[in-house]
Image (tube, rainbow, N blue to C red; front, side, top):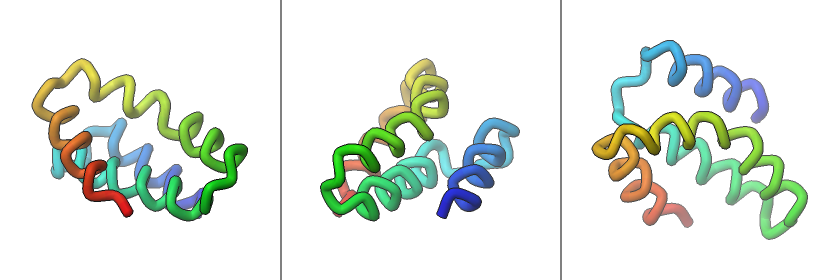
Length: 74
């Protein structure tokens, strides 16, 4: 799981991601869902994705796509 997160982060930061925030939201959702309510694991997810989320906050369209996709997280 960590490898996929790191790989996704690298792709996102390198500009190879073409989905405008949706894939980041899906990966974040997977991480949060896999934590199954464990506060420490959820905190790790938040820490792992903090920089990427902060970066897209400066891009309104991408951030909106991220938030829209995150709403579908189950």
